Amino acid sequence: LVKQNITMTLLNQQINNLQRQLIKEKKMLLKSNADLAELNAEKNRILGIAAHDLRNPVGATSAYADLILENIDSLSEEETIKYLNIIESNGRFALHLLDQLLDISAIESGKIELNLAVNNYKTLIYQVVESLSIFADKKNISIETDIDVDNLLFVFDELRITQVLENLISNALKYSPSETNVLITVSIDDGNVVTNVADQGQGISPEEITKLFQPFSTTKNIATGGEKSTGLGLSIVKKIITLHHGTVDVESVVGKGSVFRFALPFKTEIY
Image 1 (tube, rainbow, N blue to C red):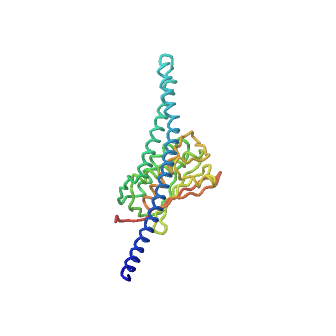
Image 2: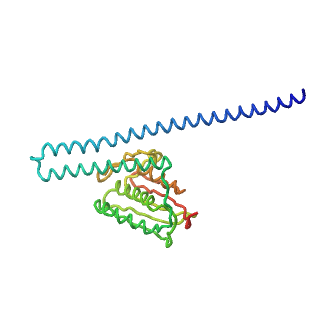
């Protein structure tokens, strides 16, 4: 009987352990189901917003193409060029939105892999500034740089960080009035390369800042040159910086401007 009692006690302990394990796995399963339901809802929300945002440029492209086809003999050259420019602008915006959707989808699914290498960050900044200077010149905005660091050779994905810089500088230009400056500063702080992109634009309210890096999040600010926004750029910026184990944040004062800041680990070797 003593032996049987010992055996039963051991069996009871095993059953209790199994029950606890089952309860734990049930909780994990419930959490996984909740996470999946949340992801599915987010996917549907993103698809709904994307479909809405695509409908306007695609619809406008179709409408103006029909207008040209139906009135090809009566339209002046000036009118034809005007309508073709509208078609080109809407087509470019739709393609840009699709590109960003594919980017954010790849990042979310974990399919994106960083091409890490030791690159010259100072050279990259100058290249991006030069490529965007044409848009700054059109709005009479000056882009200035203050890089008081000699050695900026460190590990990062050149293509992805180019995306980050282009997004942040383009946004600064987009929401800034003429006769203002966009200042890019770079420094080394606590083992990180810290980049600030400061503008003298409209600024962002504290309520809007909390949602700024979410997909399709937009502010009440209106682009000063009539430029369009997909609402995806900053969410892609955050995800790329996070993949680099960096941080990104923003400080802003309504009516005075904003400073977007991101930090990347100053690693000089690939481990």
